[in-house]
Image 1 (tube, rainbow, N blue to C red):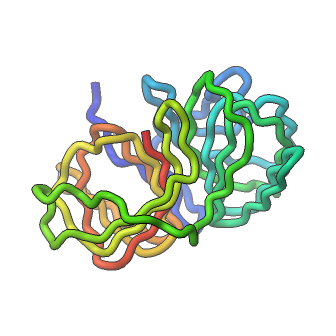
Image 2 (cartoon, rainbow, N blue to C red):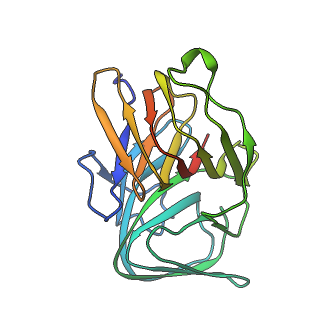
Image 3 (cartoon, helix red, strand yellow):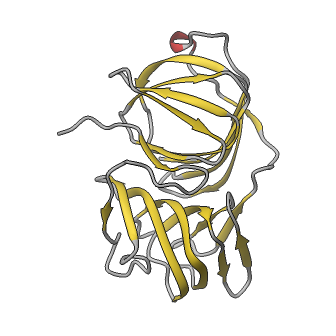
Length: 234
C-alpha cells in the first residue's frame, strides 16, 4: 500500500493541480457523478477532489455530507428556507438529505471534501471567513521548532461521526514533520504556509489555495505570517 501524501487540489486562480484525479461518482445518486474528479477516497467514505460543472441541478435528497469552496465561476444554492450565493473563495456545507436546487455558471470550479454517510442532517451552512474565533490547542511542544503559536478556531458544523468543519487561524510557527492525525481539507483564506514531506518536497500554499492532507501523511509546517483557513477534519 502506498504511503499517504499531501494532495494539492486547486490553486487560488482556479488552475488545476498536477495531482492525479479519477473521474468518478461518490454514489449512484451523486448529482455531480459525471463531472466529479476524486483525488482521495478513504475506506471510511471521506473523499476530496474537484468538480467543474455548468447548468441547473435539482436534488431531492443530497446523498452525502459535502463542504465546497468555489475557485472560479459562481454557484447559487437554494433550499426552501435559504439561498446562498457563492463566488470565488466562498464556502458552504451541504448536509446529507438536503433538498435543494443548484445553479452553476458556465464551468464553475470548486474543491470539495465529502463524507459518505447514512446520517441525515439536511440544511445549508455557510462558512464565514471572518467568523469570531476562540482559543484552541496549539501544536505539541515536542514537535515545535519555533516558539509556540497562538491558535484559534470555530467549528461551524459537527456531526455524530466527528466531522468538524469551520475556521482556524494561527500566528507564525514552524514544526517538525509527523503523521497527520486526521483527514483534513485546508483552504487558505489569508496568509501562506509551506508544507514539507519527508522526501524533501515542499508545497507552498497561498491565500485561495486548497489542499487535502490524508490521515497518516507525513507533514511538516512552516509559516512566517499569520494564517487563516477553512478546514474539514475527521
